[in-house]
Length: 379
Picture 1 (tube, rainbow, N blue to C red):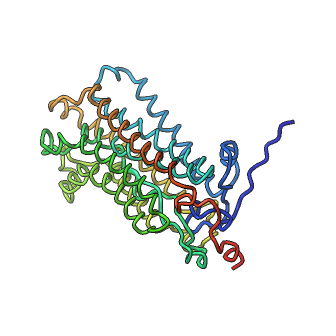
Picture 2 (spheres, one colour):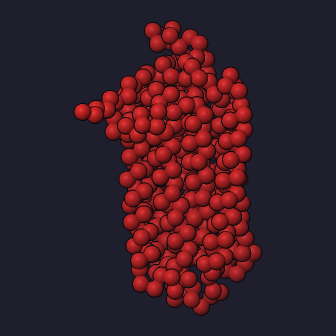
Picture 3 (cartoon, helix red, strand yellow):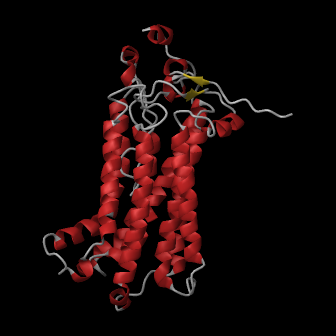
């Protein structure tokens, strides 16, 4: 009878530094796991299990919302709804890419980096369709061996997820005074460029991670914080116009879902920066309750509220927007998204090729536990 044996779990100093996570002391998978081992580990309680499922299950939720939109009456004949489709496509993609990255990142150091390259690309495209968060944190140095609570890399995204909001915000959420202006015309092309910049910077940030963890963290934070701030400019402007005016804002009024979405984005940024609660009690939250799991939950809730906010703007502003300039056609929308996808894939391929050419002795691909790991384990 066929029987499957669950993979053995390791402690932090039994795995290479490239796999370390800040404040996580146990529950690590073997750094040379097979693809089958990785899949089986998703049904075993490791320090990645909750990370996997908190993005795998929401993938199906957003796919259900996408299919409901596609099956709606008159969708193909109604250009007004097409930007919402561009939002939902990356909203389905980024949690699935994250789930795969967490599942297969323990196959090898190279596989780990490539998994997160793809994860960054999906997050960047979400910023084109809405604000998303990159992954990463601080790698441990040799000095960290004496301080096990600060031993390594946090795989948490590096700032609030860049939301795939550029298309729906340009279509439904622009302030009245911005319509037909230069910023409105350049909003989506600039967001597409930002997605390429985001992918490039976040992928590059993995290379200096061991030698210059602070510089790496700054790069990755900037890579995702900038698209988030740019994509949400229309909301910040409308919020400023309506501050203290109650219900007299007319078309500029924001729904409560916008507020919930921004709150979730702020929470994801806080969780990334603080690494709480595991920083306060290393080893206590290895399996349940560490910051990356909380980040996943906040990110998914933020995407849900953003979808509801976009739907609210679509409904409340539909009649008014019908009197304005016709929306971007489906061909133009798909062309812009297609160029962004092709550009992101090219950037990921370039960094992957560079990684594959790197010698196995380079710090980025440290294949064994660091010197002094055995002594640190005894301390």
